[in-house]
Image (cartoon, rainbow, N blue to C red; front, side, top):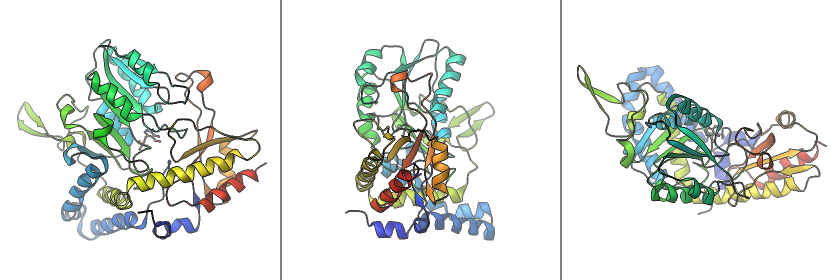
Length: 391
Ligand SMILES: Cc1ncc(COP(=O)(O)O)c(C=O)c1O
């Protein structure tokens, strides 16, 4: 069923005041997400934090079930953590690298992930190899195949890069990883909530994401998926009383599920809001969300590309809700500041990492306008008019 846009905007009161094209930064939370948090905070104030959490036990458990449904996973394969970086780090730093092990990654990998590669390479003697992009800007699958050998321990890529609206071929990469028995870690921070994600179809072993972006959850929420079949190979870098039970003086037992990657103290109100956000997305349906987001983004790209001096930079065979562009003679951050004064939100994204991306494929600093299903064609018209008026 097509999404009821009037209802979605009614549930998002801020849409009456602002034009929000910063959904890849942090999307606007719908009212049920806000209410779930406010309600729990009130319970904490009235009854105490531990008591409120105990009363919310069933709703906390339901978050795992909802995320499992979102990903076509099992709820025992989900860990709730503070953000996507913690989720990704808990997975990555759990892998036991030895000297000469190869980490294969992409040119458009998220910067923090690459910093972790560098640290582990320095610490263990593992080697980082960057798979080049193809002419469409996606990870080159043929090059990936050619770079596989027995020393490859991990393939770690980002599904939807920070700047640039392309979608990397996650499932095709998964088929290669599976065929060669290589661990596969997918950073899905910017794809979860805007695209249907099926971990079984993608074939990833680990997947990380955040709450605040396309899922429309609160800030400071995130999750990690870890496939049951690889759990026992992974030893979390930090263990606390949530992750293990202490059996004897010198022996502890790790949890048998993905919650071994969690830690005990948490913002329960935020997590309940996050659960409400996942349920809200599930009720609308990810295929319908994806179709609407794609259509709005293509419409916006078309309008921007008609403005003299504007260049749209998005590449990729499959593109998503992230629209990136530059305007000749204007700095992205100055454009974002001018828009902000008109109650229009967009984001200035940094240029590609020069160490990773060779010159012909490097992206400059860009304006990132990221749309969601609750945005409208009229907003795209107004946005393009504001950009055209800059000149
Ligand atoms: C591709 C990608 N991965 C990871 C992150 C980090 O997410 P978080 O800020 O929730 O840790 C971001 C944030 O922008 C991102 O774009």
